[in-house]
Image 1 (cartoon, helix red, strand yellow):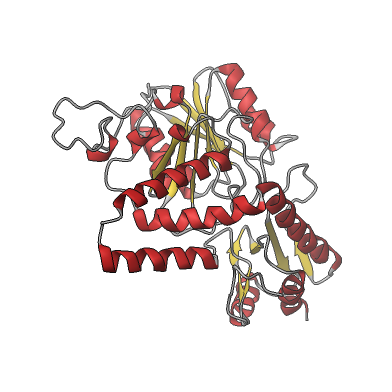
Image 2 (cartoon, one colour):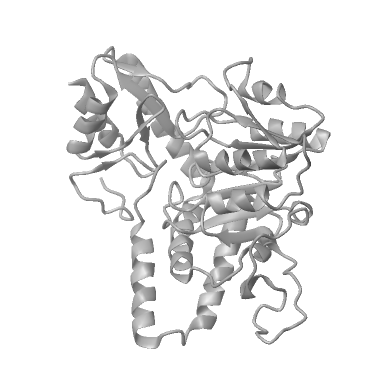
Length: 372
């Protein structure tokens, strides 16, 4: 039976939440209502829009377990937030950054671009040590300024022990940066428990939000280390004093928001987060992992398929990657797409990423298409 918030076309089985997710019904309704209000009233209700913006910050604070909504900036996307860190820190020749060889380009290109400043970007082979975390730690030395990692790897679904990494970084005075786009909305996340200095994520994957709006979390101490690279009316302390000549930088994370907010995106993402927070991220995580385990077990039991994801780890994700034993990946993918299974080619195989609302009957139907 379909979830009332996801009236997807009957011909589709949507297993691509690690890429771009469908909107809940309430999000679509919020966008329509906002558009209708604009058509009839323009910005007459702008104070209400500002209240919705404040609500979204509070929702993101709860989702991240941040100490304050003042630690939350609303940004265009993950790449922008990562670039704020890469070009905000004062680097010195000989500094290095430690990461992995499995990162999405967003968490690789900004750091590699610092090579002309004499900064080395070190990519750990996460399979080169007893644990992925130990592989990262092995590349750390006295010149390591920052460790940056995806909480869950986009292509393999590998989930890192963020608390262990955070404690390691804290003991050594190393800044800890997390691309959390494959975690937020799928599994529970706690910026305090993992001692994160910087966390960023887009809203359009597991969070069910629109493209073009993301979150950038910083601790007060960490954000004071960043010089600003964008300036505009919205990032000053007295934001709505437009004739303020002797301006000051906003004391909160709003300093990273240089211009007019994405009010349409704010209304949409707030509606989407309201669904996740109503259910509770503990329950969402339980359902996401239950579906991932169901898929993995079915794949292992089928001699026509080969599970590529590592499911024996203590920490699990909602991403399951597999391949057909005889079909080429592109042929299997094309067959699935043509039969309404929305998925992705990633990690050397087919990537399924089911969310909490997907039914087990849908999962069975999707696998049946590649097993006969």
